[in-house]
Structures are given as C-alpha cells and as structure tokens.
Length: 122
Image (tube, rainbow, N blue to C red; front, side, top):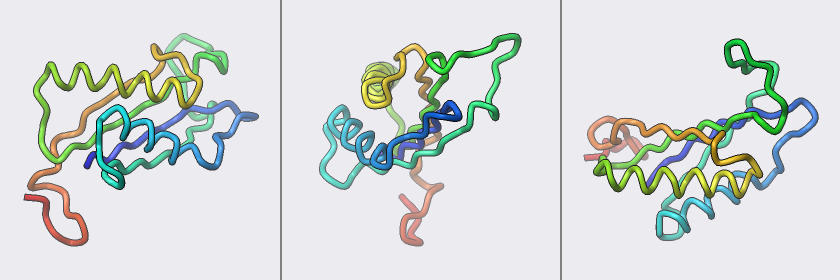
C-alpha cells in the first residue's frame, strides 16, 4: 500500500482526462513493483487562478504537480530518493509535465495513525 495524493495545477481550458487517476495508479504500481490493488491514488485539480508563486507569472507549461505519498512504514533515505525520482518521472510521463515541475512529499508513516475500514494500522 501506498496512498498517493496528486494535486495538479491546471489551466482554465485544460482539465484532466477522466481516467487520469487510473493511469497514475497503474504507472505508480509499475514503478513501485506493487501488486494489483495495492496503490491507491486520489487526484485533485487546482485551477491556475488558485495557485501562485511569488513574483512569477507562470505559463501553462510551467504549472506544477504536487504528489504526497503515504506508506505504511517509513523508507530509508536512499530508497526514498530513488522512489521519488521514479514517481516524479511516472507523473511527468502520464501528465505531460516537466519532471522538474513535479514535487514529491512523503507523509509520516501510516502505522499507528491511520485506520483502514475502522481498524488502526499497526
């Protein structure tokens, strides 16, 4: 399991395709060598008018993607570094965005703080 939240800043005239979550889930599962059904992806669009970088006016080609990854347990730094690069590349490939505009954040491990089906992950 990881749960992956993907927030994509989109131009007003360029909404995401209807199957983008599935495409991302499949790409992430491939990169993580995860079994079927073990990568969960939630996608959220952020309208360009609701995103800004200080002192910069961004073109639609420069709009970023923010990815948050929640694993059951933590990862070693070297493993996390390799995985972050692979996930950023997969995100870039699926969304057609520059890999430099894909930003990965790792959430605190789920163990002991997230409940699945009402059962605390321990």
